[in-house]
Structures are given as structure tokens and as C-alpha cells.
Length: 237
Ligand SMILES: [Fe+2]
Image (cartoon, rainbow, N blue to C red; front, top):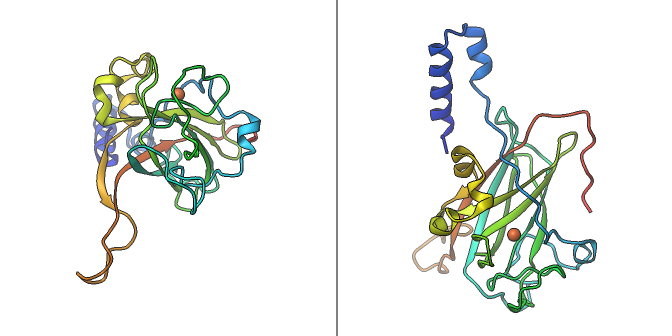
């Protein structure tokens, strides 16, 4: 994905090359294309599942006393911005995904892989004033016909809702064989493909004898919402 500075430079050069005046260049500088939408798929949590007791930001277990779900734990740190790169507060971010075996907790999922009773499968998160959200989950398993991915639905006031999918840079071999992924334009694919690095979670210990720092593969997902519209956004379930 273009970094902000690279994107600005590219757009500025493109504007200059096309002979645009400085006023128009100024309006061109801060524009960032909205994140590409993708199919919601058949496994969006139905109302029965949405009424489940657990939907917090730790999908790796149902609650603090529960056993831990199977799979490689990861941390997703995200931010939601508008096309002018302004962080968006109070955006509802729903995520849902398969467990380690590649199975969804959904009656339409007919594959015979076992459900993980300790995995939370979905979450509902609200962005803060800085547009940030985060959740802890497991690397989703592959299931027939798809590369590993996490589904997202974002609902912001007075904006069209965005349904999209996030992919894993480490799974490029499978990404390149995935029809939904390959339907995106190359730049759109880059924007929804996240690399994960092993990073410490929480504050560092104050001295060498402090508690060991927990580290998790951490990835950053930047979501850009389209412009405001008069249409009322769809209410979450
Ligand atoms: Fe899916």
C-alpha cells in the first residue's frame, strides 16, 4: 500500500503532470481511496449467534476463566478513517471468522470440521476518538475454496456501511488462488493484506527482573470509509 507520504507525492506529481492549478492540487492532496468492499458471505452471524453472551475483543476465549481456543493467537490493531484521513469515532466494527479448523459457528457451514467450543467466532467493537480498534483472535483456518481471511462489517453514522475482508501477507500462496481476493485491483489487495510482526503486548516491564513480556504477532489494518451520504446507515443487529 502507498504510505501517506508516497501517496501525496504521487498525487501531487500526477496533478502537476496533468497541468492542474495549485488550488486543485490542494484539494487532491489528502484523498485516500475507500477500502474495497467484499461479499458478506454466507456465514455472517445470524441473530441467534449475535445474541450470544460473548462478543468482546478477545476471541481466543469466551471469558477470562474459559479454556483457550486452538490456534496461533494474533492481535489486530486497526484504525478507521475517512477519505481525508480523519479518524472516525464511534464506528461499530463487527468481525467474524473461522476457527483454527476452518469452520464457522453458523448453521449454513456444512463442512465436517469440528467447531471449537472455546473460540468466540465474532466480536463487536466501537472505535475510539482516534479511530482505533483492536482485537485478539487466532489465525483463521483455511476452508475449501478460500484463503484465510477475517470478515468485517463497519457501521458509521450517515455513511454507507462497509463489508470487507482482511487477508494475511504470510498466506500469499493461497491469496493468489482466491477468487474473491483476485477480483480486487492490485492496489485494493495491498490495502486489505496485513503483515504480522511479533510485538510485545502491553507495557514493557520496568526492569530486567520484571514479568516476562507477552508477545503476539501483531498486524495493523487501516480501513477507509467512503463519503457521508443522506442515506441512513443500516443498523447493526
Ligand atoms: Fe469467510
